[in-house]
Image (tube, rainbow, N blue to C red):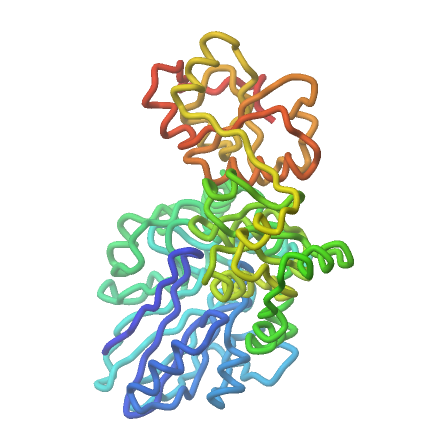
Length: 470
């Protein structure tokens, strides 16, 4: 049995495609569905089913566009009752796909409708399980997301359900089964996922901490320890997946509006649109439109858009590297940001050549950071995650994680200079753009971040100083 994993690294997402005798199925598709349609066409197959493992929080699924364009039947597990036409399967139900069979295994815990799909080949042999966010490689799904949509579903209740699902539904299955999860390392849907994206169930029973022998109470404690708050856009994506959304074609038509510098400026002034610059940090620092923010495509773009732009319905005006307009729009739509209303034609050069105002970011090398650190003892603000800071940091640096900076702007002084850094320069440029937008101009950003700082002789501490942390 051939199962094709279609992995998208920028959001650590795995969709799956299987085909038998001209009938195909897609599991947990991304928003842009053309690659699945093309894959089926190459097999001379019809996409009969779109199986959803749950109502996703970290991305908007492409099931509705596949239903529209391929006539596919959307299938959710028990309890999955969306506001559009779909089949809600029962536990143990079997769907036929050519010579293959797909069995529904209800595995609540990550969410109440979470479902695992057991794949059986043409000989009736069990091949693998598509687990969604129930079981990852090295981890399991976090149980604290559903409560942001349904308040009575506490994380303790869901963790208890997940304990039962894993032990009563998943672990009794054969060790030879291949585990096909919905995410890998880098996803915010778990806390310690492996970089590997498949494994055997037998190996997971040996090495996955959540499948080891323990009581339900011990499991709940282990699962909830170390969870960080989920990105703010997660509940909004869940509701989009439940209630429905615009076709990607509609979004592209609305967004694909090239604007010259004057038209761009006029629309920015007349609307409440956010100016989002998706160029690399180094290009942005050299020159950008005043009041625009930078979240570069060459990084965890979707994650940081979701962290830093609170409302998925926010109107957006794009500034991109030439030729990156469609990619930027598509990647915004993956996480539900559907209201791009235009982009600067031919990118930032159009703006700079028009003679309009331009801002820059002061950046320094790690060597200059070392010189200032040793002579002027500047305030250093580290915008990495708390866990990164705890592991190792510049002595006396203050930790303000990027996703918390809007709540802690008072930590950034206006009456004295300071230096900002992250791990490699991506997150600190997001922070720098936001600071510029809010009126700060007395800081520098470190090129190469902590990675380059470590290569200098700057004092580094392996121990956290609680008084310097938020």
